[in-house]
Length: 439
Ligand code: UGA
Image (cartoon, rainbow, N blue to C red; front, side, top):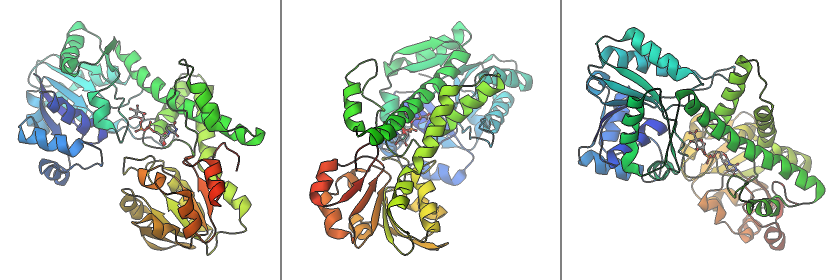
């Protein structure tokens, strides 16, 4: 079993660390935030993620995982150091690599034995070469350091499951030694390993995410056309899905993709292409469609209503997808300010994301409108003039068409997740607008 240090305890770092501990490695997670580390030691996860706390508690009690700010002792004798810090988007769409650089420098100044440095964070192609050179330049002791790329494919909301039962592990190495080390680390997972060179591994990550983003934007584009020609996107998607070359996943049209990955990684790849004097037309199209899609329902509602001023607007779902409290690039963040600007009185429901949303839009008066956070969907719907559905939480899906009819003042629903059958809503007497289906 390997002695592993993990830099960064966000989604990527923490989940990787916990899963490495779960399969028997000895793991130390490093972060700067003392308070967060104390919480983690007491078994509390800083992120909302299914199964994570349970595995944190189990492996901490078993002594297989620890959390520290003391990077020196964590890195000094590690067999492998995984870097899982953030690479946030900058204004021009490029990735900010300053966190990676800080960790690389710390590693160079502390390691005292041969060590494999593994970059899990999503980084522009060629970054791992630079990280290796950077570490060599600052290395204090006479030890062998190699950098490998090992991109992460987990999705928020199912991160632990995606890691323990991944469809593939991609490793990008430049030597047999590095390939052997990483292969051994991953052996206990019994997952197919795709071994390539470092730059290909870096590209696999972007190409995979951008392909999925493209798939969603393509379906959204087709959905918009379906509305114009009288077809139904869900039937179209079902008909497409039986073709195994297309597959059944990521065919759901809606209000566009959000989250910390697709929006960032599409822009980053477009930027990388530009840097290389190449125009990545397909990815650019995906970005453009997604931008339009986010406010599609709001625009539809604007055409239907004279004003939102003074109307009670129920908002169901705030996060970018169910199973997470993450709001990054969520459609709600674009639409709620537009509604507020128009003087709407918003009643927002989200089973876990409301607290984070309230940090951005505090309860009470907000510009021309107001926001009230409710813990019960019925409270949001009671007497509402219009309802927007932004996230397909189980709790939202459980609301019957009859309930909208019974509770709302005017049963007018804009569904960004195509939760309901068009006819079911019609039968219940609800005026229902969704994406890519007839109203
Ligand atoms: C995504 C990828 O799915 C992961 O494989 C990848 O590791 C991760 O990014 C990352 O780079 O870290 P994530 O952003 O957590 O994962 O979530 P997804 O489930 O992929 O959903 C992203 C967005 O696409 C959500 O807003 C979701 O609602 C939307 N989506 C997804 C659709 O609009 N339609 C679909 O059919 C599927």
